[in-house]
Length: 391
Image (spheres, rainbow, N blue to C red):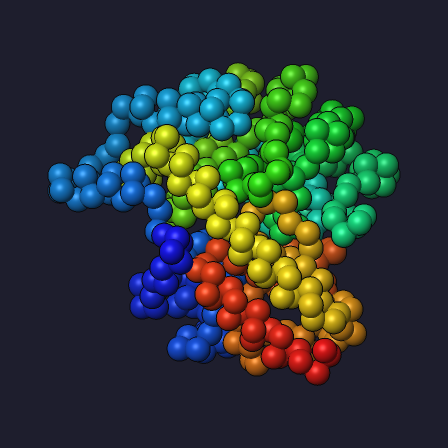
């Protein structure tokens, strides 16, 4: 039995994922399966638990100081796991990467500016852009052989000169793509052609399926460093999203100074719990745990996809990374309300709705399968029963 097979009851623990699915989706908490919010139903590695225990044993929870070991842990992880050399002074600690995105938008754009998104894409990007008074510029992706691809010729024609930033999700959420070097070079060239700040959100870069290789954007093209902002975090990898910690890594000194000014102006300082947890996670013990996790997630992916793709009219997009399955219901001929009701009211599964991810997501639902395998099997069984009339 894998450590990830343990079913942990999260009800009544202030879990957004489990305690809010009834009020938001109408899925009863006593019977429902929570497959929406992107956190996992697994405990983090022992090294992270031990770090929290040491804090509790010490019993004092003051301000965090001297972050040299924390920064070195990040540098070690990026070098060892991703072949990317990070300068310690380039690292800014934010309250997660949604916060990091908002800080980038505020730092490098002005109200009314356009921010480019390749849609469908992680819904928080558009939310933050709009809340900041900027314009979301959607560049819809096409599908080839069941995977998303980018059409830069079409995107070039869309640009008006008001766009100041492009945000890339790499690996892609919700489509699960690991972008190739050629595709990443295409993004870099696009940013240069239109003089855009390029923000690369790589929060899922450790959750890559066996046989796939993620390439960090800084390894693609040195000439983009003067416009590149990287975002990474321990939170998705190690299931510590509640620690609200993330890193904005800025290679260029001039861009770095501008970001530092925004941080100082907002009085942002780190969460001690998050700092200790992240430092512990980025370690050999943490790495071994991630390797085991990815193998487990790959097994869940295969189980889920096989079961869902056996239902006529449903298609789970072929995933290369993340633990988020992107399922297309267009083949059923049903309206979004019809198939949504079957999933939520009959199967009693809470999922993310595709339209929130922007243009291209209209016929999709997103399922989080980072949960014990028995629950994945149960979700498949419920889905097959809810759509049994199609089989």
